[in-house]
Each structure stands twice: as C-alpha cells, then as structure tokens.
Image (cartoon, rainbow, N blue to C red; front, side):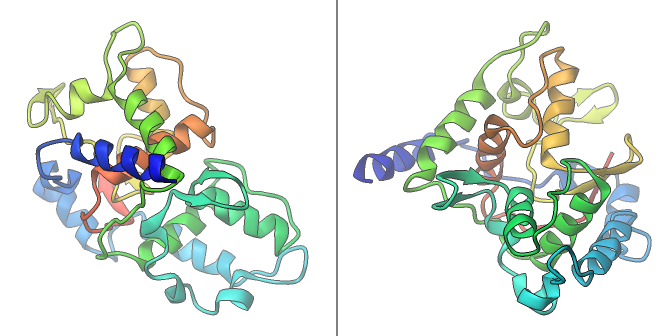
Length: 248
C-alpha cells in the first residue's frame, strides 16, 4: 500500500502543468448555448429515458429506485468513477458498476456497452453530480491503473504515430480541420456529439480517437479503456461535471 501511495504521489506531481480547462471553453457560442439550455440540450432526452429506466422493475422485481429512492440520492457518486472495486479487484467504470447492480441486485442481464439504455442510466446518474467537481481517486491500488492509463495516453500509436498527448497537451488551442483542439477532458460525458448525432460514452470517444490516428480501437469496457478513462478524468479533477455536455 505504501508503494501504491508513493506511485500515486509521483504521478500526480508529473501531471500536466497547465490548469485544466473544460472543452466547453473551446466550443462556439452557439454550441455552448445549446448545452446550457436544458430544454434544447438533446442529451436531456437520454437523461429523461434514464429516469424511466430507473423506475422500471427488472428480473428480481426490483428497480433502481427500490434501493436508492430517487436518482438525486446519488449526487456526488458519478463524479468519483472510475473507482477501485475491492470486490472486482480492479478499477471499474460507472457503467460496469451499473451492470454489477443489474446482475447481483436485479438479477437481469447486463446492458451492452454503447447501448441507448446504458448511456441513459449513466447520463442520469452523472447529471445528478452536475456542477460538482470531478474527483476520481488515484491513490492506493488505483495508482497502478492510473499509471497504465497515463502510459497509454503518452504512447504514440497508429499509422499517424500520434499519442493523445501530442494533440491534447502539445497542440491545445490550435486548429485542426476548422475545430479548436481542446485539452481532451471528459467531465461532460456522456456527451451528445453533433458529429455523431447521438449520445456517446468516454469509451466511444476513445475508440473514435484511435480510429482518427488509424490505430486499433480499444474495446469499450476493456480494462485498458477503463484505466485510460481513470487517467483522463484524473487529469480534469476539479472541473465541474457538465453531463450531458454538447460537443461538436
């Protein structure tokens, strides 16, 4: 445990020097206005669907509400994921925790990654923490997962031989195909992305970025994808949760 704590401290010291700035600051005013208006924000359709699913009994006859009451009781929960799970013996994402609850409590099948229902429940829970600071833990046993995520972030890959850091650390504020490159923070996920005309998870965004540099995409839900999400969220610790954010 001491080794884990020392590793986490060293990694935190070596984190990006620039203060984190949300991707919201890099968007056009029209897109910012769309996110700010809860009536117009298309991501709120997923939040509304999540509320319906929250109250729906599953295999055991239990709904999420039977254990947690209203979703507002989980304010301050979603902003702490991915998190170390002693039962699983690894860092897990919020979506994985939901599927564990479905399996163990509701006795029903897990929801597929990227499915509308899983995105809706994730958006609902993350929306409860809107405005709270992102606050994932990287100490203790989570430090090893954090280090793996950091190494992946900094490693060049694909036919374009680019790392995540090459764009989101070294080229922040520059233009790429008419878009301003952000710092790559994920405090708004799940997001409604105008390019996709759809809601998307951090895992989907990771896969899209890998495809953009012509690298093999990480399967959503794989341990490497979860570890990378932990690192990405830790980079933005302190940023306000914006779910559901709208991005170009």
